[in-house]
Image (cartoon, rainbow, N blue to C red; front, side):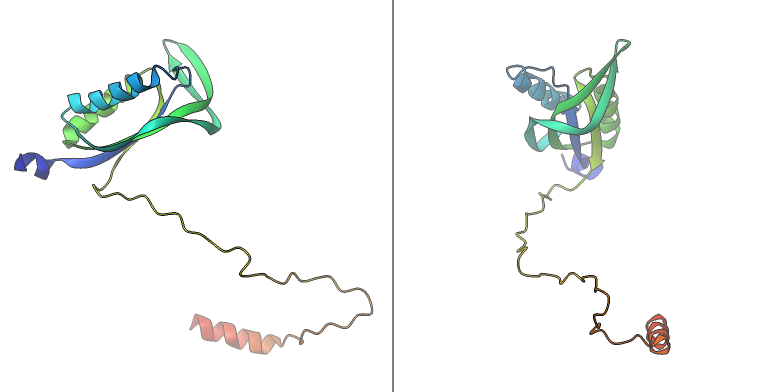
Length: 158
């Protein structure tokens, strides 16, 4: 067991399933993907059930010489521990899966790396927007001395 831990790495696969999968078949497709990871000797650390999302741009998938266009898909991910050689075999198998539009496999860490959402107060800082002066109005801004500006820039650069 210790040899596997030394040789293995933690990977995460983010995948996009075709939207033609029905809601009833989705858990089966999701389970098949997890079983596929297990069949290559991977140990699932964490995962998320795929959810239907709208895609930012259309994606295409060619299966059996038929090119299909998708604007939605089921997005999910699986984090697992696996031997690097087996991970390459898994990648080849995922490339051939007709239900996966796209996937991305990355090396990662075992710990949870999801960043917590931070609350930002939008009304705490308000910028004053400069307005255009009408003809005849006097500006309250001081005139700019180019020599002083050049000295300030030289001081910052040095």
